Image (tube, rainbow, N blue to C red; front, side, top):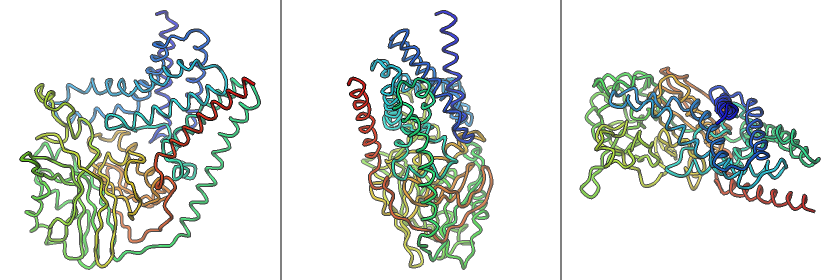
Length: 514
């Protein structure tokens, strides 16, 4: 390769890196108008010089590598907690972005196959291919829909409210088109091209007013009061509790202190995921003597805790959200369905165990996946509460969380300490905002070493305990709104938008030929 090719390769990597600044916690979404347009213009220019499919795949891969390298570096921090995994750190820093960048390589590979020209069809085709491959990335191999470019609007709540209709993937498709409108304007051939640019820019204004209208509706909505309060706990207990054999009694006492239970207050306490070391679901009853000092019949406890079930003479471990009464008798539980690859389960475990690898968060074996995500209905003080349980990572999935929206709130428990004070926990938190808007439900997020918050159906953070702080948040009433369009139809709406883009491509092509 000549020096020019090396410069182009470096340019594409840097372009991907800069694009990451549009994501949480930075949210400089304005950057994408430059980076996406430059990327698109680069590809169009290259189609005039060659149609080397392998080289086009490399173009997309380089952009994706720079993008994911800069916004997913924090995953490697999870390996610093165990010396047995430290040798893998250089591999995770480069291999994970390298793998995810393959999807971006496929975007540009398919794009060149379609023989793009500098016309409006290329504009719609690029957006369609990009968004479809992002959907694929979020679906296959358990799916990893992290850092879709739609998340660059995480702080623009009014605009973001359109996902209550079209969902995150639908909005992601819109964002890709929006961000390459400057390129379309530069390449414009007809007034139609200019009209399309104006349409996408003005759509932001429409989305803003739609979100403002939803905000007014929520303010006027009927209020449902409960005879109890939901108390969401935020803790900052070091992850070293799993490696230093820290006394579980001390941790329970600290959590009870943070929870501040009052004997005469009807309260459901929500503790984070996997907060107690060396205690499983059935073991917690042994600590009844400690809870008796502070808990009575006015209290329920929701906690993330591991569970063990013997299925066909085989021990199966689950990451569970469990509900206990004041005597620490198990009321109900949910086993996590979507597990973190390598973190909670080891793909090809029998093979990789032979070379000394195991899942990161479990010393004994991989967690098993729960069969289904069920709604948990709680009865407390003559009031019922239907919750959709989501454990940690499960909050990142759009359109895959429920079939019917017949629940009151989403409860998301998490342990973000694996990733330290990096951008990772803040990116994770942004997903909770998106799920609240999509579902039209309150999200109650309890995190250890993360951000704890109560988020209303508009995606507005009603209350929050900042990263790394101890504290609690109370919710005693909710405002109920009609089920969102997206909660009814899910990603079928994204499918309709794909069909719309295909129709537009054929329509503009027909007009041009005539």
